[in-house]
Image (cartoon, rainbow, N blue to C red; front, top):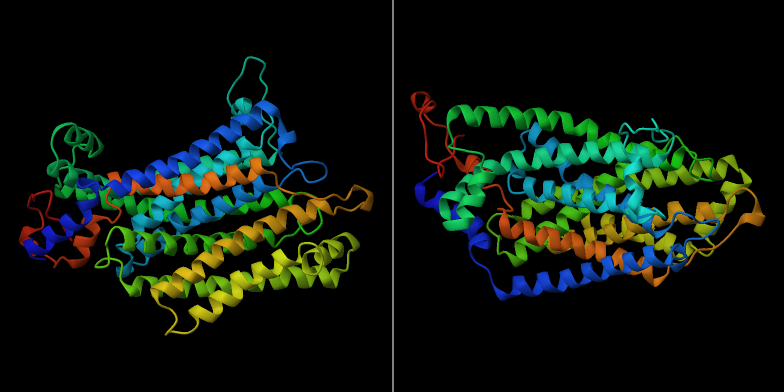
Length: 450
């Protein structure tokens, strides 16, 4: 790669960090106001009690657990996809990986809040942690809350490490481009990076190890989330299919979230030269494959319930297929199968706009799917006299909206302070292999080894 090409990549990808327009401040203020409103609403709920929500007997899990499962699913967009693409050495992954890995970290943080929001006394959430106490009281390890604590904390730790490691060379690049306090801050984040062969070797080894380790962790996390449901004797929950069904749905919604994020970055940060149509086409093909897999799981689940003909499960099936939840169910089918299959199976429709439309529909459909897993089964248990209904209240709706605003806000702030595309990885993809005698030479921070 020529020096001019390397400089252009650095200038383009560092431009959002070094230049700030009024639009950035307006967007942050708008999103911050929504997040603040959601926080105030939650404090109001804590003060007034759960009676402010629609959660009541027999539906004790509703919007909050729906959002929990949804955001944990969205988190699979990043680390899992990025790790697989790194291991297979897919060349087109280079502009995509960091965009994906950031989604994982922030979605996990947001999803982890919902079990705490759902607690009646959230200030006692630390009881979930297995710490030694004077009374030698340990958490109830048969509780799904404890399973989720271990799963999410492990996945979040691994995902943050997987995100931060390839950011170190870019922090050093920004350090050398800034002055004053920003230079000091990025110098601390760069951890003394100088781009020596020894540092490159250690970085590449660490990234390879993390890519291998994070895949089974990512799969196990959403399997454990599915155990929250499948371990309970509730109609249509007590199923051995829930593990792979939840993992497939998580990857499905995660890819959709990634496509939307990439399209927004391409549009608002003017990164058309780096997010090419081929990236959206490849991710669109993955989205189409996961749509077909998700459809198979949904069909298989309904088929076994119909064939088993167990009265309580058939009642839940009827209420979702042609009862009060039927509009939501068929909207879910249209969003998750009909629209993606129609758009993504035709090459001329598999454009950037087509992929974004399909992805938006998938996100809506997957949120409805999580809602239809949680509420109808709890509202129609085995004894008909315990049946009940659920209607969300403004408190739950406002908190839900604020979490989506929080995701956009965190993503916007990250793109402002960190290059959203890995500069050094992009240069590696364009860099010609050097002669053997130059492999052990020291090089400047703006110059990247292959």
